[in-house]
Image (cartoon, rainbow, N blue to C red; front, side, top):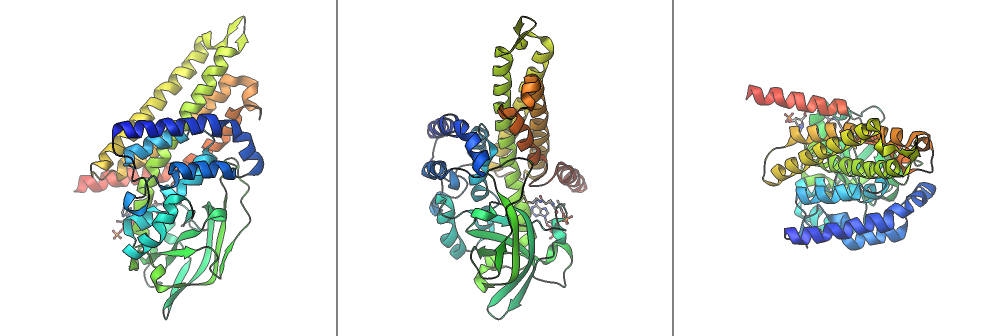
Length: 384
Ligand code: COS
């Protein structure tokens, strides 16, 4: 239970120790196994990291958005696969239930998501519906006391581990676009739900994704999220607004890690008779990265605080996601550059992190979608 500044500071120290002493030394093992080791998952469960954003009444830590962002920055200090393991339970895999679930759905799922006993997953994207999420084709047909789901979801994070899927499907074929979409809570193991083989990705090994296929998958009527039809798209958008702030914080954390690695390397590596950190062109890369990471940190924490105060931060959450995901890409690029040839070798973490961070500009809304959300919101607000 986290109640005041002192308590959150103490919690951050615990997370930092887990990151530095346990996770970082075992990053290669995660890549090798394409999985987070079970003993580290247990340590994360022990700290309550699966339930940071879940209210205390449902067994979570009930952190504020600002507190959660501070933790996410710490977790960014290790390979992003570790954060991803707890990411869906704190974000897209649980927040639909937190925001719009019925009391019974909250009571049934949130305590188990908070403890990490169940991994939650968010099934929105499809082979032909990525950025245009409202055009999704998975259908949900009412049949007596059940719903029958048919369709394919793609690149679904943590699907291979998931015990629960929040699935977005078109329940009203008569309504076009986003307005005919409902959300359903579907348990893993439900007949008619099948998983594809894990995707082979550019980076972020250890954070698994795969297809989730629904073939006449029958779920009870009470699987409809919030018991309300055609509210699914709005739920997905609200969940993504929040998740984008969390991802922005992770980007800041990874940028700080990259900078740490680059600085240490630059101070040790000698060329032309002195450490390369003494050269002004290298210093410029370090300084630009430090300034950009600070800008990202400041905007994320400021936006998170305003969200905690009840402000509508949809536009600013997209500003954070846009800036921070692009920023960490630039920092990763400089970190490789500072390492020189060594930065291209798998012996150094920057080579792996360079590939890992590319995903941040793609998932939970591409940079292009963030720009669209920001500009559309500005125009909407100006019209009043
Ligand atoms: N919060 C609450 N409601 C929202 C919302 C938000 N942030 N954004 C949109 N909505 C609502 C709208 O108000 C609208 O409802 P009404 O019809 O009642 O007015 C409805 O949702 C549809 O909104 P809109 O018309 O803006 O939908 P579009 O089809 O134009 O799509 C984008 C909007 C492009 C922003 C959306 O499809 C999107 O975010 N795409 C990216 C998806 C994504 O991030 N995928 C990553 C997968 S998860 S890892």
